[in-house]
Length: 243
Ligand code: ADP
Ligand code: MG
Image (cartoon, rainbow, N blue to C red):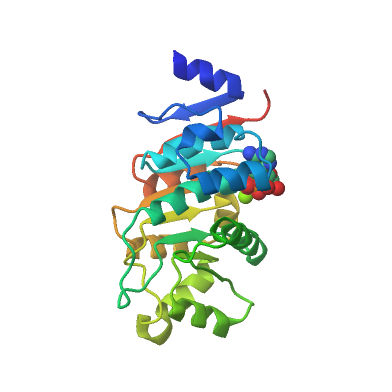
């Protein structure tokens, strides 16, 4: 089929779950704004989407929950970041009395959360409508609280610190009720570091019709079982780097 031919051209891609959209061959096929396109192609000089980007971005943009498995360095960050930012921008602006993030990205360590946060800043630079905050343990709590008070559409966090902030001031600082997009990045490491209970706790407070995506370099069975519990009939995309 056409889908299989396109996927063959990208290498060895395995899809599970029905209804996965076709992968793209070029950035221009993703319906990105010209600002984002120019930023990717002219400033970052990313000529073409990587295989995980080519298949995961259209799948996520179709609104589905997605599992993306692909080795380190294969471009997973913008695979979820572009759809997340687009989904947030498509929502009506919050009025002054509405607070709480729309997008949540959970990462296993402070360093990884910081890297993701910097990438979010790159892609939201000059966009007044999207503020981001990085909430990790071991760094300035006061700053994080002040940023949350000012209002942040995107929160990048480690699970433990996110829960600490949720319970602070009797839950009046941070609410998950407006979150419509959740990312579990480096899910294998989240799992290895024992964050399953915290993630389960957080997911239990987020609205059921949220979109949730999970990215990982490896996908051991225990993580698979967890993913199947947390995600809603996901499309799973595996890029096999052997071929
Ligand atoms: P992963 O999360 O899979 O480990 P990253 O998202 O951190 O990978 O990306 C790895 C590197 O590849 C980064 O330096 C990033 O800037 C670069 N990169 C991402 N997408 C592309 C692309 N389409 N073309 C060229 N370089 C890219
Ligand atoms: Mg990554």
